[in-house]
Image (cartoon, rainbow over all chains, first blue to last red; front, side, top):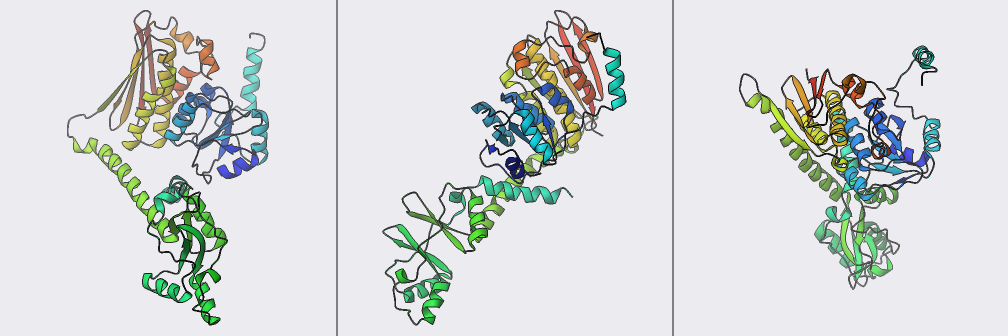
Length: 134
Length: 304
């Protein structure tokens, strides 16, 4: 899916100037926890987040995230925009919630970043073991 | 295989990066609306062009091309003024418009040239498909050459310098609590490795691990340093801080265990996944800590 199509699907706007709307994104990740983004994303992912601090851009730079969508109508501060410009990471904005923005993209066929793969068996076992202790 | 898509997207990038102002021809051949079509014929022939903007008092009033001239010839009307033949609804561009607008204009309207005007309709230039081609090629050559020079110099370090063992050491000081600047060391190490030609998947693992480590030093310590020792076959990262030290290293290694303050959690960090993630990224990880002295995280990444 190109960034142009992403913008259409989420009825969003581009925050950065001069972005290449033909950039391809292959999968998406929705997270406000950058610790998780650092652990569970692939290069080539588009990140949906409600956080707007410059460390979101750093996280994207390190993990090879190709673009960021700020959800809930959030507008990033100037320092975030300029760091993204410097690192060549396009910023987009959505007026919908994280859940709705993710839903629209998922419905349009954009898959999850999928590095976090937990089989049902492992999950049920882990759940059974920890039940009652936390 | 990777070459073609990346060069195509580079042209696309340029079309958004460049402005009309950087691409247009400034010395424009123009004609007055009161000149005759015969004058136009001579002008087009002398300059070997196929159309010109029509200008009166430096303002753009229309555009006229060889097609209008042919029509005038067919109508045996060659001595009538340009004003009677020109197109007055002109699609024009602004010098600050991105080049992509011109590309869209060529695709949409099919004309051979578009005049460039400022807000007061004052003609400042003209743009043709040839201008676009020349500008993008020139820009690509400049960018390609500069990155290629960096890459070439860097990737030859290990071949050009002869020794029993050559390594490159990069060292960065990390200030405590300076979260805004956090990630600068990781960013620089990442770029150095890219220029040295390290495999992208390894570069990503190093970048993520160093970033997690750098963030830890900023959040939890009184300051420290990050160093990267780059060998042809491996990268050794040392992340050192000067205290206060980790009371229970084993506990700190547990996924989800965190002592990060609330302000760090509000920024999306401090979930207690950092050390686990570092361990997953690195080929070898060694963590030692002494209370009141400091913590040493040593990571090894194989390049081959």
